[in-house]
Length: 194
Image 1 (cartoon, rainbow, N blue to C red):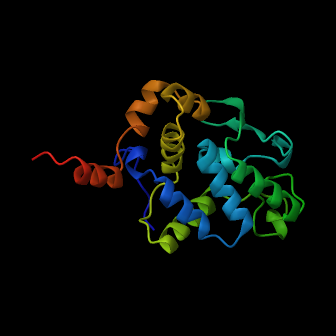
Image 2 (image 1 turned 30 degrees about the vertical axis):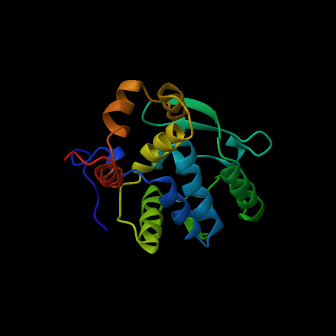
């Protein structure tokens, strides 16, 4: 699997549709992996922030999660706007091995005994399941744009979707509003020019 250069794409171009998200989540048989990808989609977490979430940072009673946003050097608390993701996380916590991390490393010996899953493993897990679903590989960051577009499709305003991600309207317009290939194909079919 190749890596994506930041100059080559806008994450909105690789965003998943609601149908693709459902198909992607159905492809998982590992609860930890499914909960991890569902959380990334639900609140638009970056890989580095996702792997660093500690078990104590998630409140199963309220559905709130607190995480450190590395890129912006700040701590954020957000309500997870998905009952399905909250349910997956609660099931994951009940069955997961004891670890300070919400998503511990699958390796349990030596230096990995108390380590979290790596950000590269997150990327590989996403793309392995995209391939299983019959979808093209894409950068993990495209899940941020997926979150943004799903929020807007559910009736959230642009500002509310930006608040969920912790981004400005300007960033959203530049990166997340870019239409995906699927959106452009649907548009061309539904609204022909000639």
